[in-house]
Length: 444
Image 1 (cartoon, one colour):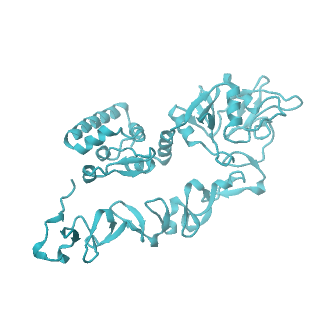
Image 2 (cartoon, helix red, strand yellow):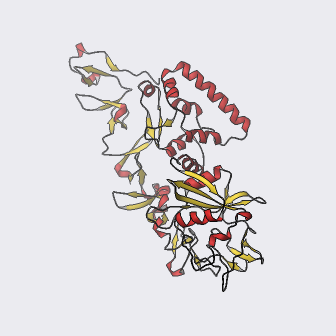
Image 3 (cartoon, rainbow, N blue to C red):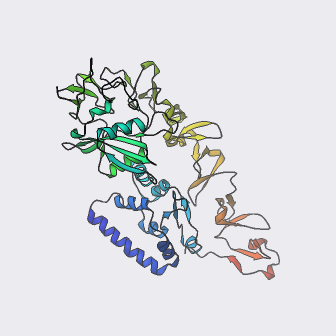
């Protein structure tokens, strides 16, 4: 649940800090974690927007950066706190446990955190913007356009409010997004971003850069605001210089001294050669034109048209009701058992489950460990069948009788004889038993 007011948020943080002080005085292991680690920055960011589902549990776990610097480490319970054992998990998975937020907001928070080694900044001159387009992520506007009197991005004049956000790593432009100060309507806005593709192919959206822009107060629109101005640059012989304009609105009106972006107009900025022209069939992912016969219809309802320019980012996967169709690779997962892709949202429709390690298998090859609410393969050495609970458990939470080889949870008493652990009913020399090795003491 989002904070409804600043006063509500302030009251929560006051309670949080007072509870933290009390815990430090009453739980030595909590004070050890609190003094040793700062709270994980992504958790702090999430808490600034949303109220945790169970803030007391979150506080006790004291989530912080794991040793790899990428994941979250936290103390699962009192026993593990006393034994200095931390559980490590992914940032996204931990946030999902403690915060009830939409998936897109969770992805933005994770992306905003994961910017180590990167520099994010704005550039405000035409030369800087053109340089970022030429040397940064590949797109149809990355060419030199020597046949034109100016690079197409020269129409985005800074005096009309245009500028660019760039993400650099080691001086190299890894991501870029054209931006506009739209003071009359939405404030600062952007339409799409570009991220450098490892193989040099057409770039996809830059999640890190977009998360940063939203954090800076920018709004992502489906198209540039109607009436946004661009420069009027005539070609030497005929026509005008114009980039391929991203988003829904790419019609252009001529006002003699400048041009404006419209939903419909005299021209259309949909050419990849840097001039205005008439559009063909549009790819709904990247906006590039392609021959209609080369289209692919994607999604559960096959209601989105994309071109060969973007089909490589889709999988032919099993999805809703066991049907097979093209779906974004970000929404799919590969199964090694049958060499097929499955849509994550519809694993149940295909009798598939996701294991604790993120891979998927058919439900017949997996068991649910109720103590952690995660699936494991039936042949996983980390699980066992516990006689006392009559269900599968994690071996870390159980002990094994040396006589029968049966497994039991810590809730069942065991005895030790000559260094071996036994169930009381199967222990040798019952008259000379040691004291119980483990006894049920409830939750610490």
